[in-house]
Amino acid sequence: MSAWLQGMMRGGIAMRALHVHHVKDSLTQDFTGLIDMSDLADNQRAQSDTIFLSRALAARAVQRFTGCTPDVAAAAVTDGFHDHAIDALAIDTENRRIVIVQSKLDNSGDAGLSQADALKVRNGCSDLFNMRFDRFSSRLQARRSEITEALSDASVTFIIVVATTGRSTLPAEAQQVFNDFLQEVNENDPVVSLEVLGLREFHSMVVEGTAGPRIELNVPIEQWGKVDLPYQAYYGLVQAAEIASWFEQHGDRLFSQNLRKSLGNTEVNEGLTHTLLTQGENFWYFNNGITALCDSIKKTPRGGSTHAYGDFAIEGMSVVNGAQTVASIHRAAKKEEKSLEEARVWVRFISLEGCPPDFATAVTRATNTQNSVENRDFVALDQQQERIRRDMLLSLQKQYSVKRGENAPAESDGCTVEDAIVALSCAHNNPYYTVLTKSAVGRLSENTERAPYTNLFNKGTSAHRVWRCVQVMRAVEADLAVRRKVLTDREFAVATHGNRVILQLVFNQLRLDKVNDVHYDWSKEITRLDKVTSVTLKHLTEVIETTYSNNYLAPLFKNTAKCRDLVSQVEAKLRSA
Image 1 (cartoon, rainbow, N blue to C red):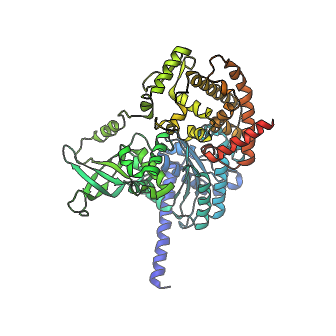
Image 2 (image 1 turned 180 degrees about the vertical axis):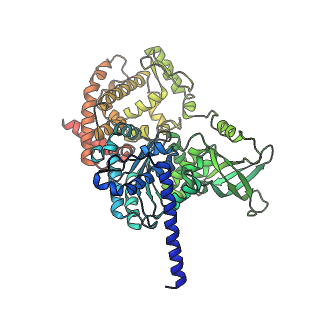
Image 3 (image 1 turned 135 degrees about the horizontal axis):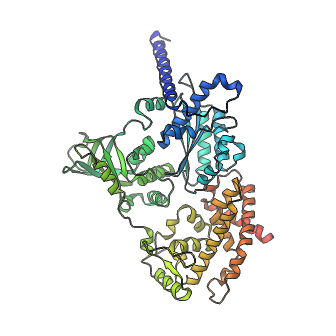
């Protein structure tokens, strides 16, 4: 080895050591007095400085992904005896996600996560997803109710963060462990993602702050145009794949000035992703586009003077409207990148150069407070809905709220069309419809001229059917709510995430052949519901523990094939009983 190469290597080692020192100083400055160290045993006191820094590193990672203050980040630390490889856990309620951190302090600045450590993280996350709290430390168990509530949200997503002062990439063996785990838990939707923060990222936080450096992009824009007065802006079409790369590189930092970040797997986002995967070439027509503010925007010589194509250098960019569009494009790219090839998105880039100080806030507020048209607005135009509304009023003296903006009736006085969609879907005895009520309820009514909507609402859908199905849905949900107060962990999760499958199974045990019979005493069916729900929940829990014991339950109940199997097995148990 040449003397020059040896010198370069020594220089690299020295620089890494210096950067580790910078990170440690920053952690000490920000988290001294905030990190709980009271659990250390006597034989750990000699390592207290290292343990403190490792916990502070986990807290810093929490800050990076939630933007919280140091004291809040410190409170999220769960590192300790029996921590089950989860060193910090933060619940981001605004964005409906959970940040899980495993931290490794590396003084050399060059180490990576071992395969054994990756397996520990995988096992810890799996047990957390399945609410096996007894396997965790008392520190995490003390937050049991808070975590359970977050895990009960069917739309919650997870970020697993490997935080280290070593390498920013994982060794192949560790990466494969996470790849296998992500493939398993993301079978239906990208619920869980992995982020690695290494010395490079942590040192950048010291230099730039936890929010990271400002975003600078080179963006190719097709069919572009320009507005010069009163303030400069450019607009045009941007390839969806280009936008997916923004989120891949910068994540939620793209939305630093927005009123909110991406909201995870919401119904609207699922619809956007579905459109990209099935009708990418039409996405521009169906989507309102993206508005971004930037410190400056300049056209580069690339593309010449033609407006068919232009290349633009953008500095200090933040998406202020369209966060859900950006996140949904990224989600679609993760599922099938090829589907984005023909998709284009309308984007406006507004430069803040020469703008009044409050202009950015005004744009953000205005672009996020305009009224939008929703599926319910189109459903209200369907003649079947008007017929049901009149029939409910005349035959049952009940109100049926269809139009958005109407006051929802009290439960004793009637129901809404949203209530009817969920109840009728679960009564339809089709696991696909039942799954949609959990994963993308908007898909059930996105087109009033074809199935599934026309299978739910047609000339045979009477007011009695709607009202009686809604009664059953409400009674089953109320019964499950009472049971959830005494259930724990895995059983609680089944009663929470499996509520729609339970409802379908309950409907299958009722006299639905009598649901349209105005002379039939439906109260007989209502009085049976407590016992029927109890037996159904018991059998469903047994089947899950037998067949799907290692599955995270939220995505399990969004998988049509698995839900079909669950229904089949439970019904076999009911028949044999």
